[in-house]
Length: 297
Image (cartoon, rainbow, N blue to C red; front, side):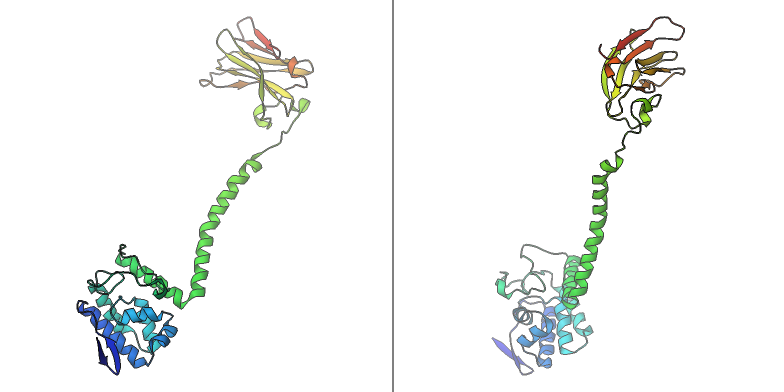
């Protein structure tokens, strides 16, 4: 059934449509009639499909706010009055589904008739009021300023990805930048501290456990061709010494009480022939005797 208003013939609105929604649709129809635009021209002027306008103006689907604004612009009329009606209708309409009427068929329209500017929400999904308003605002902004919106999205994505790229690059390059080549080799390592020469590839060539439980190891760096002794746990007064056939012996003496399980090392000695290295352990300065072992033991 149709009825006439201002020279146009419109379908009768659903009887169970809320009064506020009926007032809004009637106002939209009147503005459309006064503009002299048919549905095809209205679709071209608003970038909203003809099928969507047919649903909005016949009470089949609640018109989004951006559609109301677009109609006002196309008709060259201020939007304040219609937006006020829209706000009242939006508050009265609590279903916010695909269809305008609570008792009408809620089946989604055919895919070809769906307005691409505002994607329909599945009937089983209920959006909160803030989420719906945010979606409508975003759709309106995309319609009005597509280039500006796309640029803003690109810049936002770049701002989010740049810190992640920097972190990833720093993590992947850290092992390379942290590498330090040895600063000495053979005789140039003589009497140096093994912990400060970047001779960081040591292997254990011999080990020994003294009678008092002190653990000793002869350590060798193949890249530096130098060796040293390390011992633990330590105690005041003991001494360790490393010797070789081609270099001056190197030793270490513990004179203060160390922390538990602290490791003591001698300085380095050139080791072109690692098997000739020999280590000796002296339990105490005032206690006679020593325990020695070599690289072949």
